[in-house]
Length: 75
Ligand SMILES: [Zn+2]
Image (cartoon, rainbow, N blue to C red):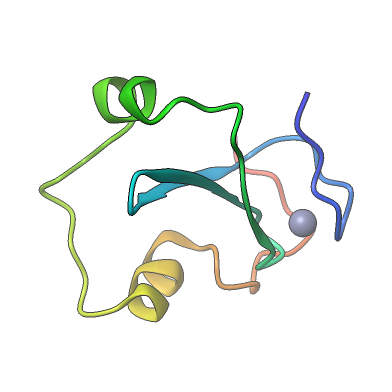
């Protein structure tokens, strides 16, 4: 089980892949590298290449992971 080291949340993650590394981002705005998630598995199952934003900050706001939903779980 993955737990956010900042707020202790246990679900509702955004998985990110950059430079062949997978990161987990929490609704509280905390992000960390997750070496247990294989890049190939991520790309086959979770990647949406048609989604793009001008920069990472815009993407986090658009997806609700810039901290404004800290403590809220969406199903
Ligand atoms: Zn968190």
